[in-house]
Image 1 (cartoon, rainbow, N blue to C red):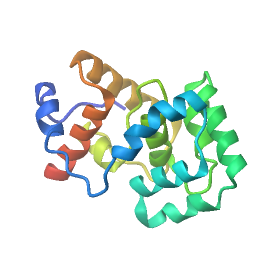
Image 2 (image 1 turned 90 degrees about the horizontal axis):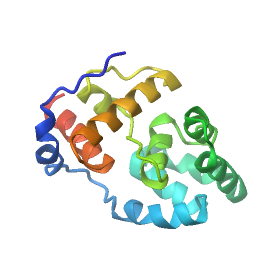
Image 3 (image 1 turned 90 degrees about the vertical axis):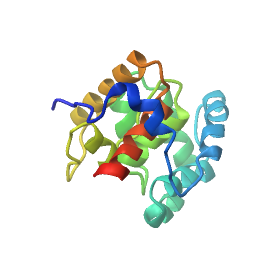
Image 4 (image 1 turned 135 degrees about the horizontal axis):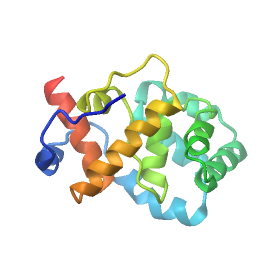
Length: 169
């Protein structure tokens, strides 16, 4: 796995400015300080994140018990191991690797990218049939490096990766 950005790094902000996703992310961005302070997600917040990432399959997240959502997300946000942070979230019903990455992206104090077929394509990687930690971590480290080198936050980079794929894939 050797990710390689398909566009010039100097274009990140320009491409991100064209970002056009049908569901608003304003409420998700407002979650971050509340969730970081509290240390876990509420079931309603999990449902909102699941809907933003995958509206058609988001109903599955509703079946998770409230206390289970709090306990699993608390563990994920407190975990020291990167593998534990992402993989524990996928045991929540209706939360796949891409949805788990959205949870970390919007709700963790560390910078995390959103992983999905669009963003992977924009860095020259193919979306697998089954996601795994090695792919996730390679992608996350690559995105952190790109964001840091270009002085952009992870949300800006994520918007650029998604939009570039939408325009060119």
